[in-house]
Length: 466
Image (tube, rainbow, N blue to C red):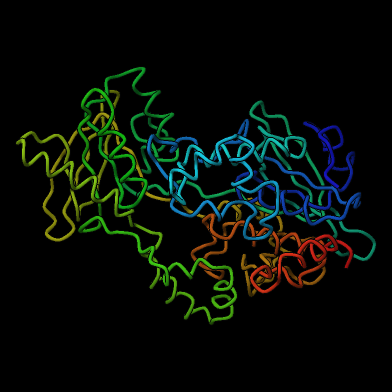
């Protein structure tokens, strides 16, 4: 059962003092939130199962620094935390609208794509129901083996977290689910400027820009990137008061549209994961490259058209405020207290220009490697031939003698496909991991497409008894 905060090990607890958890989730974003919902709904009543989560943020928020005015979701609201697994759940987006007394109003908008602000509110609404299952304000710093028992097997793991004040907490768990998201990807030219107040990643956009504007005027900005975040930030800066001038610096020769056509979108279906996982590594790599234009360095068509309209109107009026520097990259960057100077070169002929900006925003994506440093103490228990590769049910492949389970969410794109870092498969993946932890893998992979609704509650209710 879901235990309360009073029984979930508190700050400063030693690993040996508290109970051994059946599952501890690292991170409490959408992926582990979907898992919390799945566990609550799949566990039989009063089942002796202890689970909880640790999250470094002080409270729940989803991409808080990119909750821009008029930004919308890129996937259907039906791909929420639970609908694809259990449409009858009280945690669906539709029920959220009902509880907020906005269901009819939302229907009148005639859209499948709510605002990002509203979807964050939906996620926060669900997270509020699991407040006793998560310790916020703690960053997990390591996952280590707990000393083995008499048979030498590793039966549980020791998870160490740290508060902002430096207090350490240790907890023990039989299963750990790592869902820590990505770390900002910083281009080489900007690595020496990491942490400079005038150079920041899109993941801290709103907060960092507001902080900078409190100390200095921001009149000219460079946005580095070719994808959705770069486009959204360009339009957000364009719409702000004060007439900020923006250079959008893109390595791509043109802003390219995301392919969201129906047949291509089937690669985000849960069953496609089965297909991709069954392929050889070289074939998987080829398929990932072929469909990369669904997710990487691409922009929604409506945003491309909006940017084009802005630049076209500049030609009409003769008043140039913004520029799109396509096919270009920043080769070198220098910063001081007053601004940032970029050496920008064209990729085709190498022609250079030196430009000075009040701020540089890096909309350059994320790296998915945080789990490797967290799990480094388990290196001797990893399968040498597999490294950090997960099984089909997202369980990290461990060497013989390790009975503890380590599951990865958002770290398995190479084997599970482009949907792994997205919201598309949240509900079904949560079901698969929950079923694996509960010892019942059968029927976890998108079974709802093959079964009538009435059969689902009975199957789910007994998930922990097999």
